Length: 410
Image 1 (tube, rainbow, N blue to C red):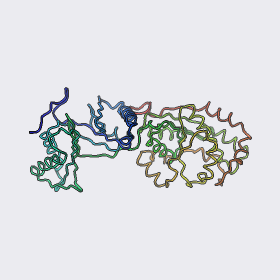
Image 2 (cartoon, rainbow, N blue to C red; image 1 turned 180 degrees about the horizontal axis):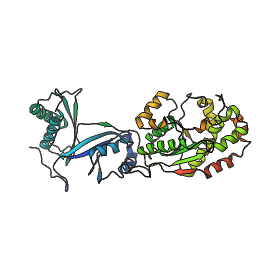
Image 3 (tube, rainbow, N blue to C red; image 1 turned 120 degrees about the horizontal axis):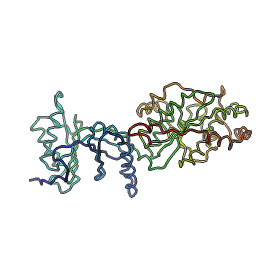
């Protein structure tokens, strides 16, 4: 006769809804795993801010359990935004007895089969509590047999319509029959901080997201053509940063008016080097800003060969002006791959909006594809670049996208 453990104090013996969260790469971190798990839990708590009800988080044997007085659908939506979890499963908690497990699975499949003739199922059990009276295989066969005999549903172990997952703990068992793909990756903040050059296009928001998935917490810097362009690009950058902040504790957006400095470069005779000189100025300014804000790298949305300024030679010339590492997560991506990812993460709808891009301001008809460092430096020497950069940073604005929204921003 299977044992009947006493439910923990305050726990209901009835099936209680919850959400199971399973980590991705964090699971592989060995002796550093505890640090990664703590960061992941902190980010989850942040994502639950303003959810509209009390919540609780419990970690047991590499699985995080999330519950509370909040609809499961809302918890699932919040949890799916947290980078570091690879699987998000709506579930129910039941006492760890064979009877409770079988009865709950039976009720669930009875409800799911309505209007679905020929529904097939499979049971997959994992016995985390080795004192449980049945092995994982025995429990799968027992529960599957009960369902088949009672409801007449056929078993399909290869491609079932419904896959019932059973995770047996000492006091509670978690049952789920629905799975959502999480963000995967490493917890945001576990790899340090970075500053992302955020334009209004598809590329840089996707690069920011990819940097976050490698554990970087990101702030953003947006360069405008002001006073020669309108504020439309700032509105777009703010909207993009707000969307990206749904995946991390809120990053700040720094807005730098570059127009006057761009004109100075043009007057200094940049010519075909204008775009490369502007990019070097952006990288140099971003590096200085990153150091002041505690970031350890600069991230751009460059993709090798996508436009004339993004050749290998030009990238090398631009990087020579940086004082921090320049990371390019999209270096080998094709444009359509970037657009598809932008749609998936929710930034594409903003990126297609019209704006006045500072990169087009004063741009020559033809951009050199092989800019040499000495040639650009000759142009730069006609200006006091340190003074230019100091002026840009002194007049920069710092915004906090999403700070006025529940659950997002900082």
